[in-house]
Amino acid sequence: MDCHYRIGQNTSHLQTEQNELTESKWVSPMINRMKILIAYDGSENGDFAIEDLQRAGLPDSVDATVLSVADVFLAPPITDPAEIFPPTVPHSVQVALEHNECKLKDAKLMAMYVADCLSKAYPSWTVSHLGVADSPAWAIIKKSAEMDADLVVVGALGHSVLGGRLILGSVSQRVLYEANTSVRIARPTEKKEPGPLKIVVGVDNSSYSDAAVEEIGNRRWPAGTQVRLVAAFDTVVSIPTGPNSPAVMKSIEPGDTESWNEVRNLFQPSADKLIAKGLDAAVMIIRENPKDALIEEAESWGADCIFVGSKGARGIERLLLGSVASAVSARAHCSVEVVRPRTFHPSTG
Image 1 (cartoon, rainbow, N blue to C red):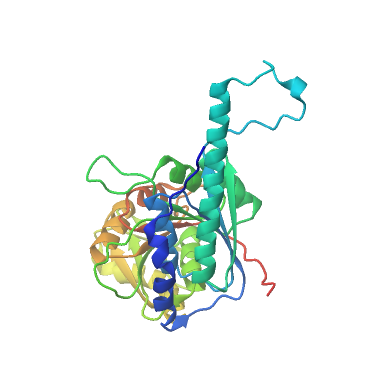
Image 2: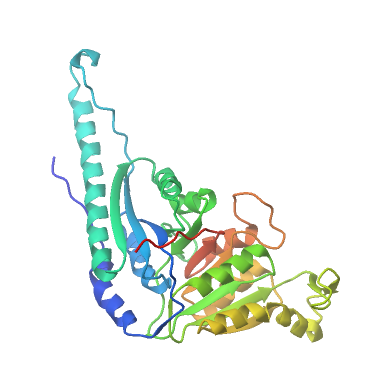
């Protein structure tokens, strides 16, 4: 049986596009190695995930693993012919076994090819590859836990019935909800002309949104990268009455626009931290449901990615996503990175 595999055309442009990016002045280099798991299935959405890496602000020090999964079952090898019952394998079963083995071979070839492309495009990275036979979502989740990944990158892998907008496919959704790490859902850029990278980050004064801001600050972005810290609320928001009395809270109604500067001042220190890293950062206060505000702001501004914490100010301590992160990751027009707290690994090189 002949085996074949498909590699998307976008990967062929990876080296050229990366060279163009590296000609820019970069800011905020990271000194620790980052572990990234990149899921690739040979589809157009898989190509989007590879292409999107150049817009993710990733550092030079990366240990990347390309994982391709054949969604097939491989029977364990038979070491003793006496174990076979019936004594001869039916032809249909043999054909099925050969087909599954071919699929696994395809997966290994795809992973090897993409790893080679990434090694050439990002020569400072250490890139490995793996092809396995398993349920795709669970293979990604298991491998991310095994390698203690800092970030999992997957394609959106789905279309909505209305308007053809890219939404989460079953694999991406399962990984996003169950992986105990940050997950980047890659979607194609809609930019018609080159320009600075644009990032929207949802902020709500929770430790989760603080982690998203910190993650942006730790990345390595080209000069001119713009960040909008979007604080959206459609209910009463509580803020400290002053720096000397953080435990004393003041409630502000969404319609009380005269007090919005007080809300803005709550998030300005986060913007200042990003500005100190060389980024063009500003705070935006929006009176709207955060689920809608982040998506609408990113779309109207032409953002390349939305960063959002895995939980919000009212999130509970559990693995599953908060409602804002879930809605944004499913409905956004651009790439979305859902940030969970992570631990850097000391550099060995």
